[in-house]
Amino acid sequence: MDITFLKRLATTSIGRKALMAVSGLLLGGFMLVHLAENLLLFKGEAAYNGWVDLLASNPVTPLLEIGLLLIFIAHIITGVWVRVEDFLNAPSGYEARNWQGGRTIGSATMLYTAAAVLSYLTYHMLTFRFVDHSMGFYQMVTGAFRSRAFVVVYIAGSAALALHLSHGMQSAFQTLGLNHPKYTPLIKIGGILVAVLMTGFALISVYYLLGIDLKAAEAGYQVVIIR
Amino acid sequence: MTKSKHFCVIVRVWRQAGPQEPGRMVSHKVQDVSPDMSFLEMLDILNDDLLKKGETPIAFESDCREGICGCCGLVVNGDVHGPDEHSTVCQLHMRRFKDGDVITVEPWRVKSFPVLKDLVVDRSSFDRLIAAGGFISVNTGAAQDANAIPIEKDKAEEAMDAAACIGCGACVVSCPNGAAMLFVGAKISQLALLPQGGPERAARALNMVQAMDKEGFGNCTNEYECEAVCPKDVKVANIARMNREFLLANLFSKR
Image (cartoon, rainbow over all chains, first blue to last red; front, side, top):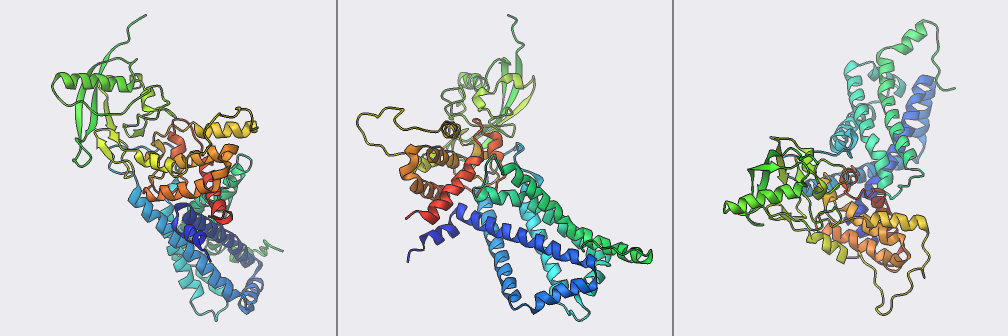
């Protein structure tokens, strides 16, 4: 059995970037699904906990979690590998050096936003995933969102994620060879749109921090985003 | 015709006696600079002065001096090929500077193009990339009629745009990662778009990309600085085509 093609995928610059791009797109897709799940918070305790219970009782869920973890690991390994090589090969030693407008804030800060997102994710897992869930998920999440320190982390993390995806989404398509005057402008707009949507995680937490749900309930309004 | 007002500039230039020697920035005053002079002509005048004083002239590369050979390549005041957009440094004119300006002149500084002397770098890594697959094989003998193979006009134009690459190396130097993706992407694209490149298409993509990695060029992080400085305005769509060619060749060719 000849596995040269697999070796090439893992060892060449373009192969590794392709792995990073595919894993990045999958993670981006997951984040959109996860945001949609979070919107269930607005529908109320029963709806949110019902969805969580449905996930928890599904035997496929642990497999999906392991798959997600592997995708994350693949994205991190390929990303770090690419950046370490680039650090070693980068032009250096100039007395003066100007950028000519190709790079963006998003592209120039990928490594830093990646580190910030990883920290955000770790915090998220430590506070929501690996804790006692006996109070119910809805109470746990909305309770956490009423803490100022917690929400500050969410705002910073979501901003880093948005910046990361502002470059990452369109970059992934370019890496996979999908660049054409017909659809590249759409990909770029779509990438920015996905990036902007990532601020939704922060906005949800701010909504509960400001107690908008409680104020609305006091005033007799019921906030229903999804019917 | 009125005579342009001549002026004086200070050139801070990288001097390095040889590949293994340490280098340093040295300042030279250049008098009587005409705004109509090209940047390289200004360096010629400086070199004449240095020779008259018995000093070693500054080594720099140039050939056509009309922006098509790709020999000249300098970083001027931190700008690859100087401050003009999509231009080579030989097309830069002294009218872009004013009296008393201090102009920093540095060579390409990237591992894959080691400095040989002063501003001259060794770009033979590009030659090795071309030797890895940037060609087509043809039978010798009488050439067939030029119009014997029909080529779609759009593709011919796209191939021509990629073929405009002059191999100056600005893409590598402008890249934050020192990648040669635009250079290799342009060559792979040019030949993949034309029927003559068909027979060796898969091997070319696989071999050139692997040769590029072996030479120590960096990875592409799609920052597009290369496209911004390329004197021939070669587009990053060529990098995407190279990625596509490589990934498809890796999955679907017998290699």
